[in-house]
Length: 72
Image (cartoon, rainbow, N blue to C red; front, side, top):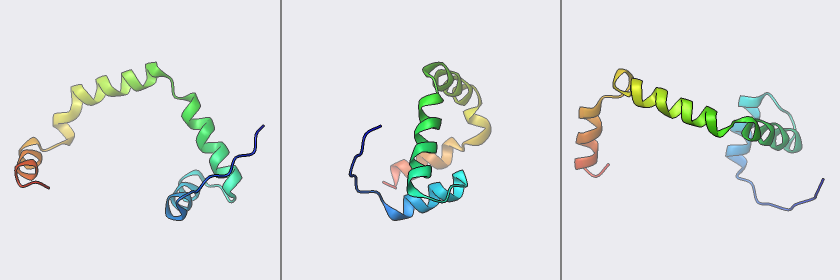
């Protein structure tokens, strides 16, 4: 195990703690790293395929196009 000094956004850390149900910074970071390392490339590819196949059921492309044209 190594010791590393990093700056962490307090709001993001608090949000992650609520989402993960953790109490300490160390526990939160460890849990987040465990989750991130467990997600395989196959899982990401499968999720992307699902999103491509189902995007029209969840996204309103007309609204997205309007927002893009408006520069939002």
